[in-house]
Amino acid sequence: MKYVLFLCAPAGDEETADGLLDAGPRTADWCADGPGRGADPRLAAYADEVRRRAAGRGGARLRTGADATTVRVRDAEVLLSDGPFTRADAYIAAFDVVEVADLDEAIALAARHPAALGGGAVEVRPVWE
Image 1 (tube, rainbow, N blue to C red):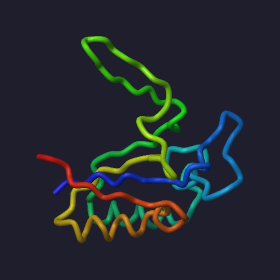
Image 2 (tube, rainbow, N blue to C red):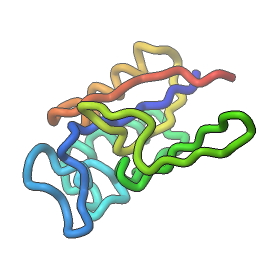
Image 3 (cartoon, one colour):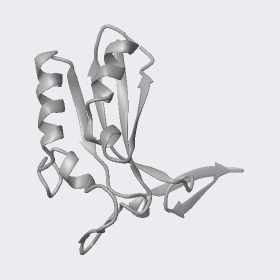
Image 4 (cartoon, rainbow, N blue to C red):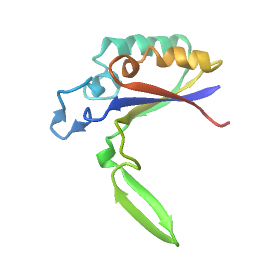
């Protein structure tokens, strides 16, 4: 079964144009394609486990909510707003798609990700198929 692992970082850990804020975990270090290129050794352990299980089906690092555009349609008029759909204490910094036998296996992978270990969280959500 496929699951999306939403890798969530604490608000305030967002990257800025001048680099990363000093507070909180360095999100880019636990994203394989970020500026830190996976500098967090826990990411290497997680990635090795995903490869060992042949579970990886894709994923990507996301730009911060400040770069988001929210689209709504009301009475046939397209309404745009800058920023994320909601304000929250955390933001989705990246996502991974994995294909594993069941929820328990997806949770086991999520528990190894640095986002879950370093002050953030990993939301595990099944994919409709």
